[in-house]
Length: 250
Image 1 (tube, rainbow, N blue to C red):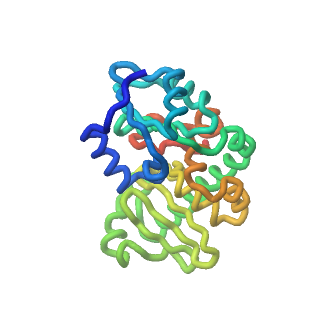
Image 2 (tube, rainbow, N blue to C red):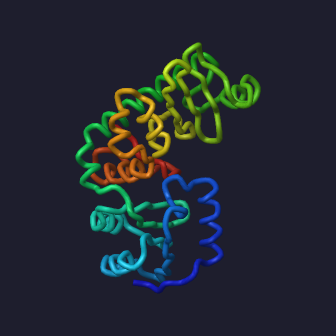
């Protein structure tokens, strides 16, 4: 099962940067989390169940991990989110929405993800046409971001405003308030799901507002939904992608 220990400097450093830049799907701040040393082997299911009886959440790093192990742990704890970060080989298990509640809405979630993808591509194509951007390479985007925009913001037309930030672009409809925030570094595909962006889309698109309410307007529940539906084969995880946000409706 491994031994319980205090966080190493490396773990604390990773946690600190995750808290600053990526904590949306990984709530260190929401409950006490026990950090375990797995040694050369992964914790058994029995070991994990024992720890979850004592602690609200578990976190551990690993050397290697298989899809079979991740799938087994995911389905063994239906009232938890098994959140996997590939970039620092980190796995966390914490309380979340029940898997059964997610599966009851799998058709609606797929429909929403497909609509998000379609809207994302339409908006990027319109931006490309308006500003002369090559969507295969994103050539022209740097000039738009730093030379043609006001603090990386602007408008593609009277209806849509954009905000280029980091690896993403947020589009906001000035009339309806709809938000379509997308990952752009995955060009020429723009439909990959970030749980918070997907929640924003759901909550600001009239057709899908009831779906957001069903999940208590909680993007952490949406994060689990994305992962679970990838395991179910409803959504597709593209492992060749170099980022963790690699699930899409295909």
